[in-house]
Length: 296
Ligand SMILES: Nc1nc2c(ncn2[C@@H]2O[C@H](COP(=O)(O)OP(=O)(O)OP(=O)(O)O)[C@@H](O)[C@H]2O)c(=O)[nH]1
Ligand SMILES: [Mg+2]
Image (cartoon, rainbow, N blue to C red; front, top):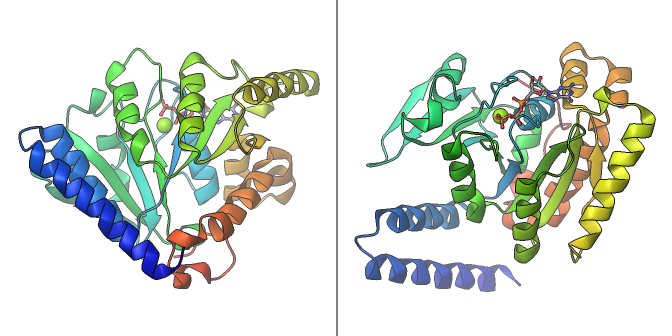
């Protein structure tokens, strides 16, 4: 598809969305979804969604890739709001509220007051999403790196928040972990992703908690489960320790980074962002200094 055809296709999709808006004027949820879709079309927005059961280490993995302790993490179900991270020349957080679409800028240090179960249980503060801008090189690829509330905890609102966001994902990182690989909720995500044919990466996190034998067993189990889904392109499984990866990035310990397994995942993600997903990015986003280092 050349650029002209791509633009025409975009206009065609926008027309369909506007028609849906005109027919269902009283359905506020649908109106809001349509507004989001039109914004995404206008921005050429590409959402790489990190998803999985609660406490798998999704936020920790994003922190490891971003190279710092930015997103709140914890031992109890934690993230309660969709949190997008994208490139910006200075660090900032913009909170986007539901309803009339009001926005407020807050310092990064206050992020946890709005996106965690402890400070904003089940998202009672009614945020649509929090948007973080960071001067981190990998984000120059122009994508939105999206953290989501964990699935399957006793906090049903968190599962619902993530499920509502699924149609907006353009590619998925499914984070599962060694203590109980592939839960029922994660199986459901796999089903949904297979139907969309979108790119999927599977991360088997917390490898630091298991022996080599246990690692092999779990990997064999996940590989076999994935084969049953008959994906058109079998997803890669990345065994890693997000916690070790983050520690290694922060302390600059190359051996620990190697041991964490984070590097091969980052390399594959990068290949995808600079190759497979290229058509949706502007060419100026493709160039830039070395990746995965934090600047500013
Ligand atoms: N041992 C070990 N613990 C990890 C690893 N990654 C994350 N954790 C721990 O697992 C817990 C949950 O991590 P989070 O990153 O908050 O998990 P999450 O998936 O974002 O959780 P929710 O936001 O509740 O869905 C924290 O105590 C982390 O320190 C890892 O690689 N190894
Ligand atoms: Mg989290």
